[in-house]
Length: 370
Image 1: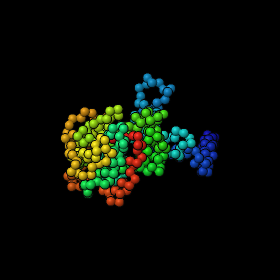
Image 2 (image 1 turned 180 degrees about the vertical axis):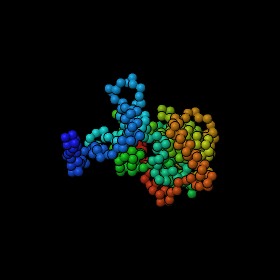
Image 3 (image 1 turned 90 degrees about the vertical axis):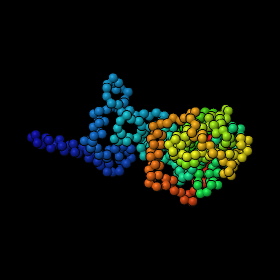
Image 4 (image 1 turned 180 degrees about the horizontal axis):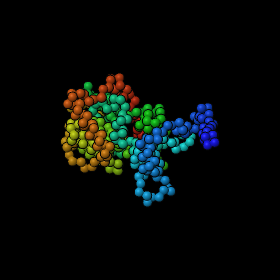
């Protein structure tokens, strides 16, 4: 009698799951955002699973905070990034039922932590790390043109010292201005003065340019530092005041050249990665149109500024320090092996980088990188 009761009980359990199996096999399960998780097999002996189940607990509001246990915390703050003190999630659960099939990465989730200098280096386009670096200084606010962006970009593409190429910052990252709202296809579409549809607009909320423009600075500062991290050899800077590279116009934010680019270059000079600095004067100086002097005999050697103590330095995060350490080790290894560490780029690719520079996207009222 006991045996028959056991058989009956097992049969009831098995047949109770048949409707669920039929539902999954019918294709309706694909409409359920948790269908993938239902089908996921989890090993009960998985060490990470044991760790989460027995050594930690979710940081929920009703948990007694006086308990001494490991806490696994999740943050859904403004940065929209999941953070944890230990371990990784075993199953990815969507935060809303209707968005399960959508990409986790979109413009509403980005924050400044996504655009640190070290991370920006990895986003540079192929060929964007080739050649020496060409920077430019800041102009006085009422000058026309407002910045040296276009002049520096043109100079980089019409470089007179063949065959040594140089690169300006406006040609280093993706710049497809026909797809401004698509994630990661144009890194220059921010316009604090007259905002346009741009996947980066979440970085500069505000009612007017006086509020928005300061919020864009960290982004452009990190992009500038990223460019500087990739430099080696002789560095060039286009400047209205070749004898005063630390000039700071009154009534303007301090030049990115001074706050972010020069400090990185000094660190690279100390490491032996950067070997020198030359200044290219503009024709007419501070009152001119910002056009570069293409005659190399007029360029000034200002390497001594790289030897001078820093009056200000950028915040050297652990991420940047580790990146710089790895790069120095790579360059030394290449030097010992006789390899050429310069990224190869064909003539066709170089012409592509110089055609339609992103400098044209800079608002005429602003100076992003000066």
